[in-house]
Length: 474
Ligand SMILES: C[S@@+](CC[C@H](N)C(=O)[O-])C[C@H]1O[C@@H](n2cnc3c(N)ncnc32)[C@H](O)[C@@H]1O
Image 1: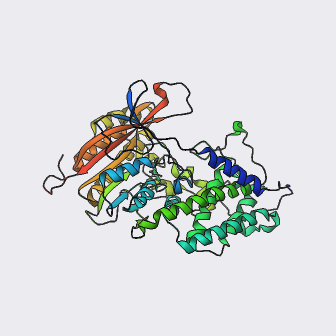
Image 2: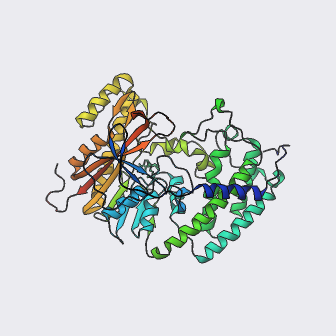
Image 3: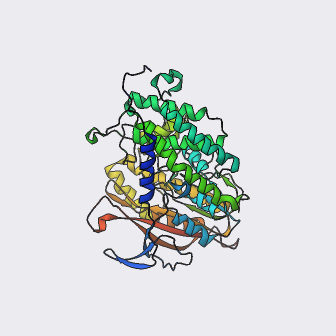
């Protein structure tokens, strides 16, 4: 790439530090008050902050959980679509397992369940088909030892100095990754800054744990300095937004991310001092539909599977995937591995497919009339979820719980009540439905206090039968 003649704005580290201090100052914690009845069209129990382990829950009840912990410790290192708020898996883990037991998240995403399992002294495994997700989750669940923490602080200072020393001429062609549409996603001067930062992280004289942490800081700024919309899960350029990216933005944003995240990693590592005997694993080459762990191995499974037909994770994370070097070309093979994938071929949807779950098949038939492709995507999603339920049933201990947090959505304007179909399939596989209840999510961007402002996630508590004879029935 040709170096450009753009003049870079001088960076003031003092300004960046002041900004970080101001941001940290704004994060004042409110005192949790629980439980309050909160009227929102209907009665909803509002629980603010920590969720009490023994919170009374009735079947079908609706809760509004207000989270305070989304950015604490390593939870806030990186954005991730449909991420758990930490209080939820923390509560479920404490309520349904004991210290020293094994927890599985078969759709682990950014590893929120695993961070909470570790902090609460449970062993855990996270399965995700996406290499970027596994990488992020590993960084978030890997506390650094005392030597590494010293190196972390030294490396931070080194990187901040490197940022000040940036010159476009310090970046060679070989430092810049090649990937599809790169120059549409990033301005040339930003590409040079990013390539420089990435090189400086790679050159650090530090162990993999420290370098990986800084690579995640680097990854966390990619979307903000790209031409893509920051507030859309999919990576898309919206011309109307007129997003303004200036030279030096990548350098400034990276400095800010480092200054915000290093103290979080320090605190997380200190909090994990009492968990040195606890393991966390994110195995490669596993899939929620084919889990290679022994039968009766896990005490608890907690997860939020992808929504049917809602988030295209590889597309969402394409900038991170390319810059971190997980892929260089087409993302289609990765997309095909995802439950809920939209990468299906025309031969798949020449005819209407059925799941044998009546309620689901009725809706799928209606979708088929409008859009056969979408009908097949919905059908395949449920078949994949059935495979996942079977696999988790197999690897769970008798009497163990599988807790799924699932949302509904609309497909071609038909309500697809995912949670109901999953409950039916779970019963067929041999799970007992212990209970289910709702967690309401307020959409802050809709200002009016109406029903449309809230979205519902259903929390399904399934139990594997304790005795051999009753498993496998209906
Ligand atoms: C809703 S997200 C999970 C978010 C997670 N609870 C968190 O807090 O970050 C669903 C995840 O399922 C993963 N996924 C999709 N298909 C999968 C499959 N076949 N096996 C394992 N993971 C899969 C996606 O990559 C995505 O990370």
